[in-house]
Image (cartoon, rainbow, N blue to C red; front, top):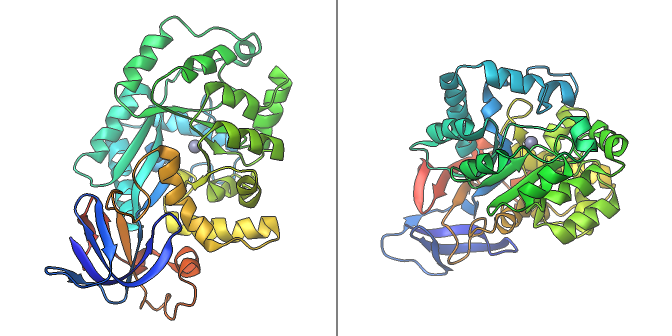
Length: 391
Ligand SMILES: [Zn+2]
């Protein structure tokens, strides 16, 4: 595909170029001036990298807003929360049907890759694969062993059951890595066992104030320090983290995924995006549980930008927010996605800058982060193929 006469945010700095020509097959081939034979005229459109939702749980799409107004533990605790009960008591076909709906919703909102924490072991992964069948979106699937250590086992640093190793191997044969629920329900020995696995490792940490207090009470150590025992490639949330914890995560991982709207929906405050970036963290963005929050990264960017500035009492460059949903996420995942650059996967979203909410545009990054909606998306391209809309 060749797109001519198009504006674009190119390279790792999302540099704004005008009236360019983008050639692509499954990867981007070139971005340069000059019209080419067979090209499509894209006057008025801007190409941005396909958005990467770095943290979702789409399995709970069936449980939208259950327990709205209740606290985090009541709603989403991995062992006794409402979410687990709903997932266990719902017919698998119904779970798949609503996961498919969420995949469609993400595509319509410009998400070209999502990273899912899939509960339910190999069976849970099989359901997600069914929902993904024939869907063009890219998915990074992080599975979970549904066995947890009690507070007593954590305190005594109990060793995992002898069968756990084989269970983990069987799980990893089906997916891209581990999405570990958190440190509080895993002993040091369990977390260390996870640290030795060969694929991606990610873990929730410092999401709730209660979780942090529990960790100190039960083990005398912080939740973040214990989460790092799993040697994660990236950590989810860090909403309650101290500056020292942010610095240690920056040193020892590839990134932090923040989920500001999900945190707010649980009345847990919000991530300090400016402080995380200042501590050296590579910050990416996720929408978290569909039960809590819509899977719309455009809405997430708008909220992250404004709530981030409200918290920091200082301006945040909207380009940095767009990087969180594109460039930073690709780097964190270690994949050639998230940028419009030669050699990267040809995933992009074409936004109509003549839309009534977009024109006139005085700051392209602010316009996309703060004003773009599903309606302003003219087309979504994944791997060089048009998967939504028309041009
Ligand atoms: Zn999560």
